[in-house]
Image (cartoon, rainbow, N blue to C red; front, side, top):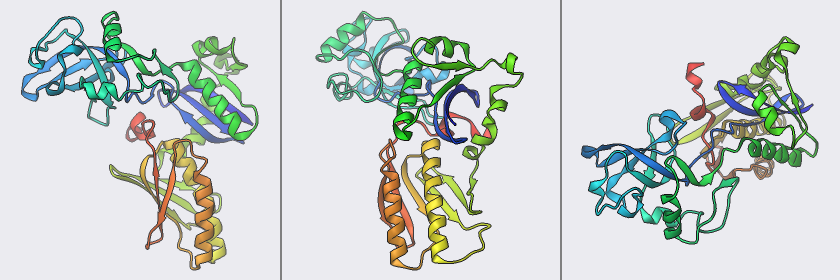
Length: 352
């Protein structure tokens, strides 16, 4: 069976794709990375001893819609509701045009900028979109400022849109292209069904009629349980240990319950582990430096075969995962672009 289920998973609206009963896709359509977005924001507080301001740029996102704005780089022309001569005149209630430089991370709030250089580097002026973008392109910075002055506060002028319909249909198109077959859309959320029923063949799962929650009917808990654990078992009896740190991600391959010891057996386990490691990396949205410590192979031929297998595997990754090297200790090094928050950043795993 090939299905895409749109439901609330771990208290987040989620898109879950399944092929042959195994989770192959996970996305949170309302949790898009907002880096590079341009907003009309409103100053909530100016903290003089920090030489900074706290600016709300999204009205309906609680604490996640407030960013930290260093005042020292603020160009006065980005204050929209009145004219000021210097950044020191900024005060609570001012409307400001802000560029989201970095997303929030753990306890740190999003960082905003009112630096002209940041705006000029935006794709809002280049005409090059990446993903589903919202807002027109602008001829120059002056046109952007003029447009901003006509808009209300907390408005996205340019950036990644969290258009639910677009996210779901994009996921469906992506999976159907990758697997070469049609994926059935299912949801237990009435507003999602109403949004998509005219544009796509979607089934509404009625919990009252079925007498079972969608989570139970489709065994979502058991099919997603491995994403929340450090140890992930493989069919062969081997297992992965996945460690996420501030600087890198480490995946250790262990032979586990598999008692047969030979280079041929270890090569097959390593290939099985590579496939599962790539799935875990994709579903957990791991990025940056990734190290995979495979089971040691004795011959150069076996190592070369594993490197070729893994290199072909990572080419399919949509976030540009790249094989870098095999170290002297037998650890494979990779890098992967950060496009979205990790699963750990999105949901509070430690609370579960």
